[in-house]
Image (cartoon, rainbow, N blue to C red; front, side, top):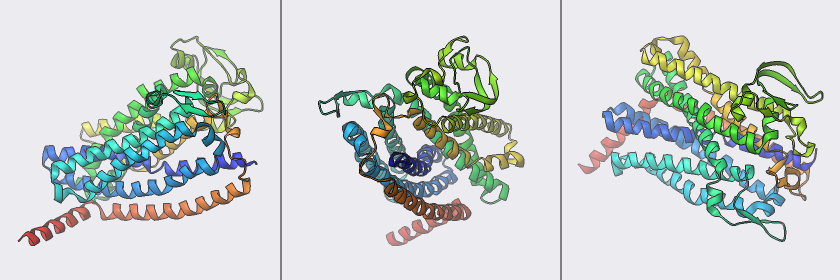
Amino acid sequence: MDSTVFSRLQFAFTIGYHYLFPQLTMGLALLLVVLKTLYLWRKDERYNTSARFWAKIFGVTFVMGVVTGIPMEFQFGTNWARFSIFAGELIAQTLAMEGAFAFFLESAFLGVFLFGEQLFGQKMHWFSAVMLWLGTWASGGFIIASNAWMQHPVGYAATPDGRLHITNYWAVLLNPWIIAQYMHTMSGAVLTGAFFMTGLGAYYVLAQRHSDYGKIFLNVGIVAGLIASIIQLYPSGDMAGSQVAQHQPAKLAAMEGLFYTEKGAGIVILGQPNTATSTLDNPIIVPNVLSFLTYRRWTAEVKGINAFPADQRPDQIELLYYSYHIMVGLGTFFIAIMGFAALLLWRKWLFKSKWMLWIIMLATPFPFIANTAGWFTAELGRQPWVVFGMLHTIDGSSTNVSSGNVLFTLLGFMGMYLLLGLLYVIMMVGEALRGPTASEKKQQEETEEQMDQYA
């Protein structure tokens, strides 16, 4: 295996691990605003205590995201030097904006939200939650703008030395590829936050510990999760599929395991792609649906993988196919779980339905899997290009870094991230066992101390 393959593996591992944390913070950021708003509206201290509790979860997760995100930026220089030379002027703009604007906003108001409630008052505390949410989602927006440019390059001009020069900042920031990708990513993040919140809420209700807070978590999380799961399907999922069909048809064919061009192509429910024979083994297919979903005509022609030159096809068809189907399959289950939970909640049966609470609790990790599979689908489908249609991935890697060097650092990252992951799990389990009332007692002690000082 050459260094390019190992560099791809290293980046896949580091970004896949890193994204476990931002997807949770981006989802929780919105839910913090909801909890704080409910507190100001209903004057129920339990909502405020819930907001403080989830803010601590957010803070620890935010730190983990920062720590695991830093190494990825260095990889542009160490492992992907030729890509950085070719398109660095464009990619650096959005990455720099993320750090200078969004990250600064996010980290500053996180500090205010965690430590400024007594000093600034409730209205400022609510405002800091809103700004934290906006900063967190702006950070995701700038990162998505970078990725969207790699998927659909715009706003550039080529220089005589073969590099790309940015000619239109707004074209890059308002790339049409961003709209569907941003909606899909943010709704996926809300799903992660919602399932994380409802999973812990279900545990509290089942264990009969902190039950009042568990019911609040379930109420807020189920409503947010149902809305987000529907947005995942439509309009964001539909828009993303239409974009892929229009601009990356080889990716669409590989996602669906469609090897030969068909009119009235069916959508694959189940099957195993066999690249050696260009067939789909043991398929379960619903006829004509793929043609309708992509081109809005039941008999529309959909190009197959073999219709494209070998150097323009995704090079990991099986992994791309399975990643896509894991994402779509889990997304369908999310709608069913949240929809049925919302029905039980509306009929006031949820808190007595232990079987449903168990389903909600056990489903907690699955949005992490679905979101990771979604990003694998996006990135594997862009191959063999690092900048779609312009620079092949093999031409973007560094030439003076050996496969041994990359493998050594990859193993180092795996070991370091394993220790960080264990530490994070221990902290999260400990915080969950202490429960929201621990933060309430601490808040009361701090208030009493301040009153004593004033006295």
